[in-house]
Structures are given as structure tokens and as C-alpha cells.
Image (tube, rainbow over all chains, first blue to last red; front, side, top):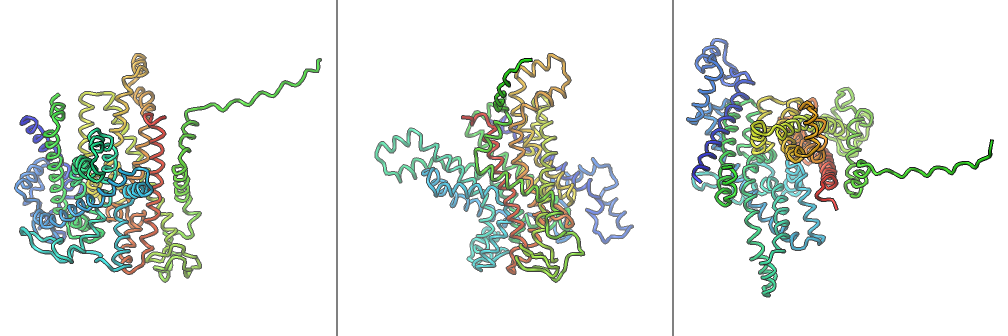
Length: 324
Length: 305
């Protein structure tokens, strides 16, 4: 186990190194590094002085090592626009994104589970077919367009919910959260629903398939034969067993939910790190772009690592396979 | 000279069941899929013949009248055209804009899917055929690619390259090639152990010939299914990127960019600038997905009755 852990850890560090090289080459070598690091309004002499000061006259590999060294110390440059350390900026926006992603995940479970359960218990009913059709639509609908339509219906036509922004926030554990105030919660509902759409479809599919499979199991037949009420069989015997795979997949999807919040945040002007990266790309605030990419890559590698380790802990076959 | 009776007319040759005919008849079993195919064909034809069928050339600034800006669907503009789907902020007919937008969306979607398919299928074949270190290296790359969500990888590439039709295609190819590689490798691993490959090897045929003339044709069915689905994915992803302002430039608006243009007018109730391009996008994606679903059912031997 410890050997496997070590190997997986080394692999993760390797991937991180490769990704940092890609980001370095992408931002610093494809674009003109002088434009990236020096304010656009600097004159010729200032530029040359800055080039030497920043070490841009050195060979590329040496520059990469310097970049890597700075990155390891948490220094990814300063934002041109906000004049703040880029990493600090990203970290400041992260809670909003996490709140949105978690909200969407919770929503997917609350809405997806009952629908999937129903569709699994009565696979041939008209309502079940409708639920399945909705889940297919959820996979096909372009997220950003659904977001716009939600704004159109609920904010513009009906005026029930605020269209954009995060609303009032309250402090908890030193961070600002929207879900603690009524106004913030009203602002959270639409973006979270929008982001949850794909995941709701996923949960419906998983739950439905799980229920249909579990209903045929011997222990369910036995529970029914024992004369337990259908409700008890469904909610205790079936439900408990389908919950594990569903929760696993939803947890796995958290990473891609965070990545996909880029789209939702742009539609609803939600001030998270996704909105920040789009704004930064549009004004070419490259230190922030680099900081975002490095942060999210690190996040992904960590999530993948945790998932792999959890799996190998739960399922010894994974460990044995990687040894062979 | 004898007066022999005319020979009886030869019986009509029985319709031979070729694999292609069987495939067509099986595909047509699903009315939904057939309908989707018809819809998609119409969409594709509309995109191809855009200059002839659209009421207005949306790029010809001469025919645009700023006074026609943001007209409601069904109103008649100053130029005498009825704008069935309304106009955008510059007085551009939405229906024409959508037809031209479809063109760009389809070109980018299909183009990137084809290139990704060529790259991915070649690498997948090579991985399966060569095995060993080559296989390990290629599949490691595939795993790395697939562990990051498509939107994130595309975002990263476009942040490096900047916007533009060609850059979007490059980004989509980089994002998608891995799906093809994985699919082809899986099938090719099974196929390469078959006798016909052994026979080809015994004939000392060159590797590229074995790969592309013997192995590839037998890996096609799953590739076609994945390819169809990936076209839909590519179109959706391109629209998303263009909506975010990272995709196609403003001079070549795809459906995603049209939707983005309508965003600011949405809050004042002028829904049609965003609504109709979205509907067009939705119909395109759903019809491709339905066709792909049916293709999967028909081409998957495990599902055969």
C-alpha cells in the first residue's frame, strides 16, 4: 500500500511538472514574454532594463527553472489589472466558485435521486419515460443557453429571481458565503440549477440503472417475501445500496463541475474564479491566466489522486493490477 | 429458321442483401432516428446553400439598415424584407444570421472532428499494433488528456493561441483526439490477434499498409459511432467557447457568438436575438445525437438480436 501510494504520488508530481512546462511554454514562449511581464505603457529603455531584471535574456530552460522556483514559493506574478499578487486574487475568488459547485452538486442529488428512483421503480410508466427524455435533453442542451433562458423567464419575464451577481453575503469561517442570507440564496438558485443540469441527468441515469439492477437482487426478494412494506424495501434495502455508486460518481464529478462553472459564472456574472479567468483572458492579464491554470491543474491532480487512492483502498484489485 | 417461342423473361434478380443495405434497413427501423437524420440533412443543406436561401446577406453592410435594429419577429424592415425571427442590434435579419452561423458551427464542428479522428485513429492503431513502450506512451497521453475536462483544456489552449476559427479547430482537435485513440485502440487490440493480420504479416506487407488497409477497416464501426457523437460535442463546445468570447472572431459569427450578442438585450426583454440561435443549436445537437444513438444500436454486435 505505501509503495503504491509513493508511486502514485511521484506520478502526480510528474504530471504537475509536465503541466507547468506546458503552461510556461504556452504563455511565455508562444506569446511575447516581454508583453506579458512588462506594463504595456513602458518606454524602450524601461523595457530593456526590465528584460534584464526579469532574466528574459537568459536561455529558455533557465527561465523555466526560475519560473518553477517562483511558482513553488507561491509567486506567480502580479495582476496587471488589479495590481495584486495573482495567486491571492485567485484564492480570493475561490470560495464563490466552490459555493456554486457545491450548491449544484447538492441540487443534483436532491432533484436527481427521487426522479431516478421513480423511473427505476416504474420503468414503463409514462412519467418515467418523460423523466428519461428530460435527462437526455439535459445532456444535449448547451448549458450557457439554458442559463440565458432561465434569466429570461425567471428574472426578466416573471421577475422572481435576481438575474446576476452574488447578492448579500455573510461571514463564516472568515469567508463570505451567499447561502447564509436570503438575498444571497435567491442569487444562488439560478446559477446552481444551471450548473446542476448536466449532473441531474447523470444522477437520474445512475439511480435508475442502479434501482433496476438492485430490485432483482436476492436480498430485495427476501425482504419482500418477509412481508416488509414496499416503502421499507425501497427506502431501506434498495436506496442504501444505490447511494454508494451515485455519491461516488457525483464526488468524482466535482472537479469538472468546478471547471464548467466558468460558463455558468460568465452567464450569471457570478464573481468566482471562472469569471475572473474569462475576464483576464479578454484583457490579456497573463499572470492571472497562469495562476488560474496552475491552481486548477493542481486541484485536478489532487482530486484524481484522492479518487485513485480511495479506490485502491476500497478495491484491492486496483493495487494488484498496478503492480503487474 | 425455326419459330421458337420467345424465351421466358428472366426472373428479376433477387435483391442481394449487402452489408450496406442491411445497415440502411436496420437504421430505418427507428422512426425517431430517421426523422433526426432528415432534420440534420436539411440543416446541413441550409448551411451549404446559405447564400441562395437566406433572405439577406448578413455580412453585406450595404443591405443592413441600422433603423431595423432589434425588430420583433415577424415585422417588416425598411428594406422590405419580413424578418420572421426578428433582427439583431445592427438590423441584421436573425434567420439569415442563423443560417450563416450554422455554416461556421458545422464547418468548425465537422472539420475538427475529422482531423481529430485522423490523428486519434492513427495513434490508436499504432498503439494497438506496436504495443510495448509505444502503446504505453500514447495511452499515458490519452489518460492525461481525458483526466482534464474538455472545457478546461480548450480554455487553456485558446488562452495561449488567442481567438480565431483555425485556433478553435486546433483546440477542439487537441481536446478530442484522445476519444478516438482510445476507441480505436480498444477495437484494434482485439482485431490484431485475428488470422487475417497474421496472414498480412506473413506476406511481409509494409506496416502502414497493414495498419490502414487491413486493421483500420475492421475498426470502423465504433469509430463511426464515436465520430458522430463527437461532432455534436465539438459543435456544443465551439458554441460555448464562442459564447465566452474565446472562440470565433466577431467577423465570422457562429451560433454561439450570435447567442452571446443577444445577451445584453435579453435583460430588456428582447429575447429573440439569443433565443432562436439557441434553438437552432439545440436542434442540430439533438438530431446528431439521435442519429449517433441509433448508429450505436445498429453497429454494436452485442446488441444484435
